[in-house]
Each structure stands twice: as structure tokens, then as C-alpha cells.
Image (cartoon, rainbow, N blue to C red; front, top):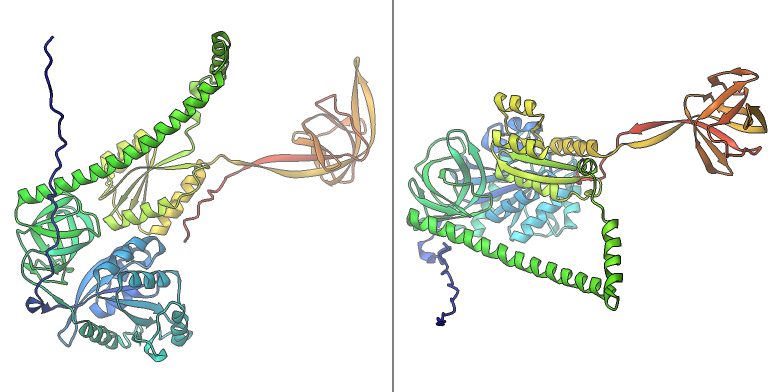
Length: 581
């Protein structure tokens, strides 16, 4: 036999093909840009109404339940000619990731606090986001037209969170506004612009574009659409963009009023059409020179993610292997010195104990899993719902299993998935066509559509509760105490009989009974006979005497025992999961 010498294969290290930001531009090339301002605050403190007054539109009226559940980006032109880009963030507890994203993109944060409500949970959270992103704050104390408004109290409360207003010697401007009546709106805009001038915001309008995805959603006839804010460069039609693991050739750009625009300068919010795939909200947008280059970048990013995943998997496998080896070693120690016959006998015994479940039992064991499919209108909403689901901690009662989540209307595919997994489809701000609803009804799949996030979560809690086994509660109907005991002869048998008087309620022969001695239940079951004098009777009322005998002969009565008549009712259980709002 001839030997062949083979060379060891060397692992190819792939070169980094990722797209990165350009280095900082020369300060001489920078030109002033308009500020990007995020409006933050607690739910229902009037953020959207404030924006409406500035934009003279009605956003809040269009939002379901009057609460904001998306990030909106708007360009507002003031009478003085300045422009401000506003981001409106949701104030509801469920949307903290969205608020954090809003804080990263902006130059200034307007913190809205209601004068009648004071500092609330999301107010504190917004302050935290602002500090984390190192963004200056302008305080807008809203609802000052209300009778119970107390702006000074708000300012004092904010001192605890290191937000010191100018009245108290700090550097944060506080403006008293009323979004409903439009009081002091211009003062707020001027305060913002004054702060922006101090910050000296500048940007480089030349070269490749850089920006951030604020929100992404699918639109009928347009495919995936993203709302983005440009941070550098000027975006034109036909540019090739990369964001996350998707790329786009810009087919169309439009502003917040759906008017088509041809170019977008820094700090302008813009809708972009032409994405091949779905970018996540919060991804960084970079312009690249050509389509092949864009594909290369996306391939590289996917490859990098795969490598990360493989690394994590390897660690997991290693841990599992160690556990396995330990278990095996322990099992071997047990048989260490035994004769082979004794060894096989022990193994046989162990095997006998592990007899498989019958198929019927197997099928019954899975009722405590709730598989769900989540569809939302935009990427951020789906993310918010998934974040709430991550707080689910009642898996011991019923497991919550996420089968699939995505953006867009409910499709035939979702219904098929739900049928396979016996799951429920939850839609947030999306539609399900008639055809889909009929097909779902035919397949027995539940589709639940909601417009408000906490309604969706309540519905999910109800659905989880309905999967839990019922709790059996005992309701007492009557109580009697034993005054005398005697026995009667039936045929050749002696039957013990208790002479009782009903103290409370009534005894009904059909119901269940229990015998209590010194506070301990000795017996539960039903009666053979219940007599009043010599007549058989089915109900004995309070204060009457009766004789009764039980369905078990071995029980001996004693004077002073109590007999309780009760019925069992099944009560629906409630899930113990509390999402925290």
C-alpha cells in the first residue's frame, strides 16, 4: 500500500467586508442643521396633543384609545423660519425600547409632565434614557389650564431625579404650557431653539449618507417602508443603502404627509421605499457604492451572526457534555464492584420503573402550553409585545410558546402555523381579510385583533387563564351535630346510625357529606339513608332532628362529632402573571 502525505487544511479567515461610518468630517465643511427633538413623558400626559398644536394636525384622534403606540417623526416649520424635527414617542410602559431608541437619535429631549399628575413611572424612565444618551432636557409642564394644576410641585418632585430647573438655580428651562388651549406653545419652541443654538448643531451634507431607522413597516403596494432620520450626507433617489441585514435601492422618498421629495438633508425625517428585506427599528443606515457591495455587506453581517451563534452553541454543547459525563460516572460507581448478574438485575429494575406513558396520557399532558403567533403593524410594536412576553414568569402553570412573530397583515401562512401548533394568532393594529377569517374559522384557529396594547395583554392573560385546570371549591350547605348513636339491624348486618340535630342551613341527601371530629375530617362520602322519625326524607331543615347512616360501615360515630353537607363547584383559575401595568 502506498501512503499519500496530505497537508493540513488551513482555516481561511474571511476578511472583514462590513460597511462602517466615515471618520469625522473637517469642521470647516460643516453647516448648521435643524435640531432633532424627542418628546417624552408618561402615558396620557399630553405629548401627542402638544405636537398636534405645533403641527396644527390631529394625530391623537387617529391613535386607538387615544394613546400613542408608534414613533412618529415630523418636521415642523416655525413662523420665525426655523425648522425642528420632532419625534413623538409612546409613553406607555410597554414601549421602553422605543423610547430608548428615540433618545439615541436626538439632540434635545422635551420632557412633558402633567401639572395635575406630577412625576410618574415613565417620566423617571425618560429622564434615565436622557441621561444614558447624554442629551439635554427642556421641561414642558403641561395641562396648566386645569384647576388642580400645580407646576411648582412638579419642579420640586423633579429635584429628586437631578432635574434642576432655572428657578432653583439649575440649567434646565421649564415652560408652563397647555397643549389643549395652545398656551405658551411658541415659548416652548423658542426655548428649544435657544438650546439648539447653544449646542451649535452642525452636519456634513456631502458624501455617503448615514442615518438611523426610526420605524419600519410593510405597506400594501410599496413593500417594506422605513421611517429614518438622516444624520450625514444628502439622500437622493437611486442611492444604495444598507441597514442591519437588509439593503435597499431607494425607489421613492416621502415626508410625513406622504408628499414625494427628491432629496433629504441631515436631520430630516424621511420615508424610504425600496428595501429588499425588513430592517429592524434602531438599525444604522449607511450608503454604499453599488448593489454588489451592498450584498457583500449583508452577507458578511449574516456570516458574522452565524459565527457568534456557533460560538454560543459550542459553549452550550461543552456544558451539556460535562454534565453527561458526570452523570455517567456516577451511574458507573453504583455498579463498581458488583457481579455481572447483580448488575443486570439492578438495570432491569430501573428499566421497569421507567415504563413509557400510554399514548392517551401523552396527548393529555400538552394542554398547558399556549402557542401564540404575533403580528404587528410596525417592527417596534412587535418588539414591545415580545418584550412584555419576556416578563412571563408563570411557566409552571401554563407555558407560553412563541411560534412566530412578524410585521404585516395576517396571512394564510400564519393560519396554517396556528393550526399545526393548535395556537392563537394575535394581531396588533393589523387586519385579517375575509378569506383568511373564513379559513381560520374552518380550521378552528382563533384570530384576535387588537388596537391597544394593554387590551392585547389582557386578552392574552384571559387566554392563559382558560388553559389552567379549574379549582374545585367546597360550598357548605348545612351543618348538624351528633347527639346520640345507635345501631339498627338490616337483614344480618348491623348498621350504625347517628341521631343528629341540624344547627345551620339544611342537609340534602343527594349532596356530599363529611364527618368532622375535633376539627379533623375523618370521612368524606355520601349517605345511604336519611330519616326523620320513620320516614325517608331528602331534605332536613334547621332545628329538626334526623337519623342518618353513611355509605361506609367501618366508621364509628361519637357524640359531639359534626356532620357537614357540602357541594363542590368548579371555579375558573386566573394566571398569576402580572406584566406590570
